Image (cartoon, rainbow, N blue to C red; front, side):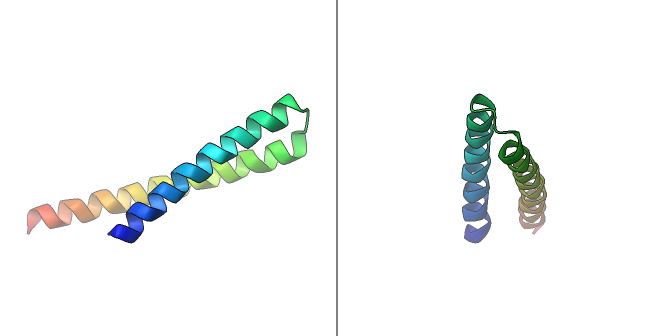
Length: 65
């Protein structure tokens, strides 16, 4: 379970850095890296969503025992 929480923290930090990068690219008129960072942020949000579903499922299984 500790690995999942560490992965969750990594996803949070990566999403925050991606958003900061998107803002920086927007302010400096760099659309190509900004588009790449939008894609990276979208993938990270999807993976985080899947991880949170898995964590919730794990907690529900432990509560039933």
